[in-house]
Image (cartoon, rainbow, N blue to C red; front, side, top):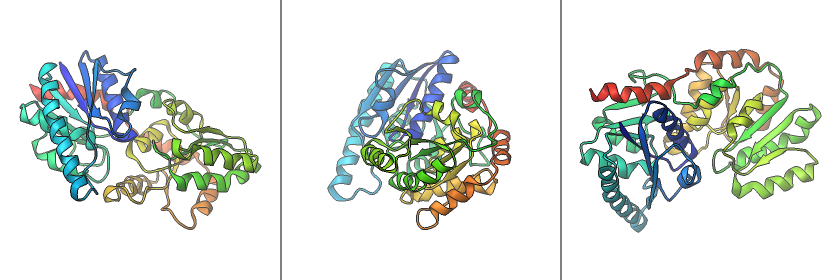
Length: 339
């Protein structure tokens, strides 16, 4: 079986691609990746990855673009569509799995044009525009939030389950702003850093590369020790050590934290398409698995109130709720669907 995985742009989509590619290899698939020169795709998969071949095409997002910029983006996707057709034919691909994001457009449409079965994973509680457009033509449409999904759960790398543990007492907190960082979360971390130091709580912080120097200086001025990162590929190891997370509401991070039993305060990115990060986090809050607070006043107070709460009940519920082996089920399902 020869499989193409496509999609990306942000770390959330790429984490799913990584989880699926690992299971594809375990099941004896030959797997290639088609992504974009924009976004995080090259940073994740150029050089070392599970893929036998990786391709990065000149594409970018179309949503929120206007006028000439939108026309240019669509033209680049069309050129990438033609290039994807040649790549798919060259590797004699049997099926394509889209993990969403603008990077997925070219290869997804190319697959449909070549009558190659298309499988889609929707990572968010609110369907993305591209996925909504492609859904009627997909062989499978998988979503952790869709009650009609043939596979329930979210594809998370095994390492998050392997190091799973119940958190009881807060000794270490991790601040996660996503692959690009988040100024709101960075500012929140700095605002509580001295209080956390007083309580002997260690801080791990992924600040994003663009805000790294400012945040580093901020901690130095406060005389607070911190493990500070701009970007890291070893986020799983940092998550394992933490007892509480403060994070954006991106789906991949949300489900990785859940799989590891790590309770979190989610601060959704307010400008995410269709406010999907808030809806992702609302799903967690509704099931009493964590906390959510929008940006604005009261964020610092909310975090400090959580610092004083017991973590054990939520940590146990996260472990009970998370489902292991979803990526493996998704890969094995391809052969079933193609029979």
